[in-house]
Length: 185
Image: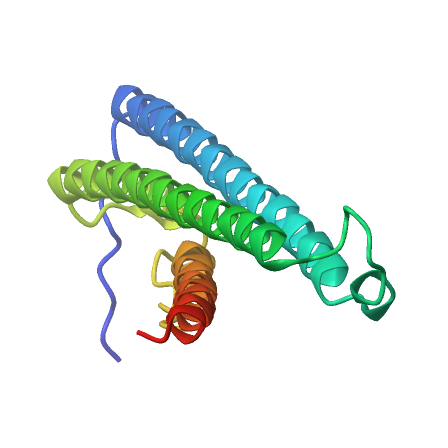
């Protein structure tokens, strides 16, 4: 029977430094995770507000009761253009908000990756010591999380951006189609 060699241990001072470095890096990761969560919530909230506003505009635009009225609030051609202008404006705002949110989330991921690389470099200098056995990755868990290509919160800004581009394209196309048809161009 072969004996397995025990891993070396750090000195008490080095073990205390390891704990302090780990705690500091975990705190930094937790701060970045908080920023990430706040940015996701901000992005979803802003987009939800814009989608709700667009929904109200579309509900009024396609309401049969309003269309049958012959008053100053009916949706004639000029009012249609104003409504489409607002739809275009809200789509552009949503597009920019989604792009900004995507950049902020990407920045958070860059910082988190940097902190993880600093931890990896630090423990790499220590070597394979028994004192590391009780520490999780500074990211949490084993540090070997599965990367999800589609089902990732980091994709939320891209999904919103794509949605706004589709909506903007549809509204502009309908607007141009209506004016080309009206003027026979």
